[in-house]
Image (tube, rainbow, N blue to C red; front, side, top):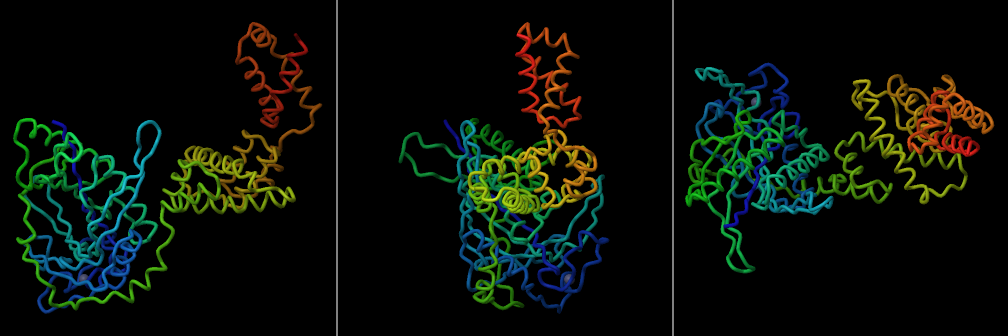
Length: 508
Ligand SMILES: [Zn+2]
């Protein structure tokens, strides 16, 4: 028997609006003392009336437009009734049969055999708007609970997918791409650890048909896994469930009832919770205090505001600048860094054109891409790590960074000394040419001067020269290193190697 997992996700995205979903309370309650950002509306006092937050509706429409979904012209809110201490009204205002968004797809890359990637495509069922519940905190001894109502009424967009995932890894990669899209749209910080992005996963197993057309795919009773708080736990929780359910299948007792289980991150297991209510248990009915919304104007307002999305930006960075796909991905994952890189590219093109009249930028593209990815993604990261700084704390700007790359490109400074200059730029800012001149870090260009250094190195290292004679391959590298040391990193490495080799050739 061959089983395959069938996984669907329900994601709650906390929307970054100024106020709550149905009242004027601040939506930044998570940064305030408990139970401060509350009012009679979000506390469910009798006689109060909700007001829809237009910005949350705009964000909902923007999400739908970005995901290629159908944004509804008419949409309404419904009451979802249940009792729980975190729900002051005794019902949650949500959307049932007329959600703001229906359909759509999200494509993302998944590792395939070897180093290849394939594009996975997941269909979206819907996106609806709703309000969040309060936050419950249970004491360690389990004897008491505290409620913080600051979160009650926070706007959420719930994104529901079709059961299109076939592996825990796919689910994780989808969530990471979705997080990035929410950030690019500016609708949420989408920080999973802070609960701005929360995920429940539905999972069941089914037998794989042996031959084509043998059996129509059937969906079995699914298990909903809750309390998933990180990308890592998405993968771990689903892997655990696959193992648990596989065992049930092999024992001849596959799950027959829909169930809810909670993920215990510490123990690395899922634990059975209450049996899930069907939607009829919630006694949904249209929210009588709110009118059906006509969204035509908002859809037209938001349509031109869909920004360039991460996937489009990756493709453009590869196309426009000749960056490697992996480098484009690293940049796009960090929008401020990608913005910086694009400024560096444009400054670099301007520098090169002013230094070399009539330079063909198209021919120089691979070289520029190599410079930017090497120095921005590798070297700068190393400097930041060493100085214990974040990219935002770095004092350098794109113009100076590009000028440094021009100096490297024109061989006016060697790699090791460029790193010294970069460190100074990150720490205190400043113009790389000024730093280079002030600290005497410019590359040596006088060949006869360099040749005499090479001759001195040979004389000073007779034992290494013997090793070279004996065929020791890294002897040359050592001598080049000595030459770099004697010139304080100012000898161009290729030139140093050429001159050392020339000196050694004389000894033959
Ligand atoms: Zn309120």
